[in-house]
Structure formats: structure tokens, C-alpha cells
Amino acid sequence: MSVAVGYGSSREARAALQAAIHEAALRATTLEIMGPDTAEQSSEADRHMEAAIEAAAALGVKANLRPNEGLDPGDIMIDASYEEDVELIVIGVRRRSPVGKLFLGSTAQRVILEAGCPVTAVKADVGPAT
Figure 1: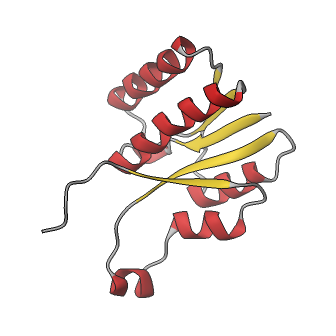
Figure 2: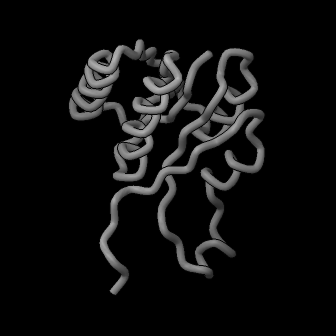
Figure 3: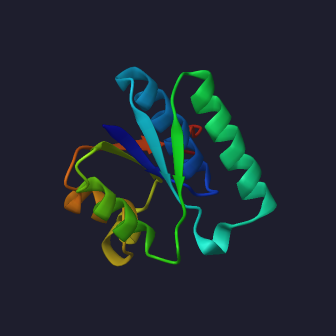
């Protein structure tokens, strides 16, 4: 079995990656990291991926990187959720206004509603609303 998470450079995606590493350690399973997206490939993304794989290894978790070949991140996560060995999807979510929720599409919402396995939604640390 495995835990799957999408790579991204946002605070929310980094929080999801850290949560997925810890969840994989708790479940004594492997971690499948989806991405990075072609648009996010850079030396900085490579450093983040190496650090994440090292953090996972430090907790005894084997992390596998699945390159994103230009596909929609939501589709990748939904497809992964139907794979026999994926037992959990971890996604990052962000605060949105009521109007933003009404008019804008949300990859996280789509994954939550369409996934074939449980989904854990993780928020990045934020301060109090002002």
C-alpha cells in the first residue's frame, strides 16, 4: 500500500508533502510523489524534492517520484486514487472566499469528490484572520 501526494511549490503543497511523509511513516508504507508539473520544474524544485525524499528516508519511508508529463494535476491524483496500492491521497488546500468558492474551480475540491480512496486535506500554517 502507499500514500500519494502531489508536488507543488505553494505553501499548501509543501504542507501536504510533509503531512504525507508523516502519514506514510505512521502507516509503514511507501510514498508516491506526483510531479512536479512541467511548469514547476527547476533547480529549486529539484532541491525541494531531494529534501522531501531525504526527510522521508529519515523516517523509514521509501519515496517514489512519478514525473508529471504535462497532465492535469487533479486528473493525476484522481487516477492514482483508483490504483490498487494507493490507500490515501494527501492534498493541500487554501482559504477561499465564499465568492471564490462559487465562481472558481478547485482542484482540491474535485479530488475530494472524485477520488476512489480516502483523501486527507491539509492546510498550511496561517496566522489569525485580520
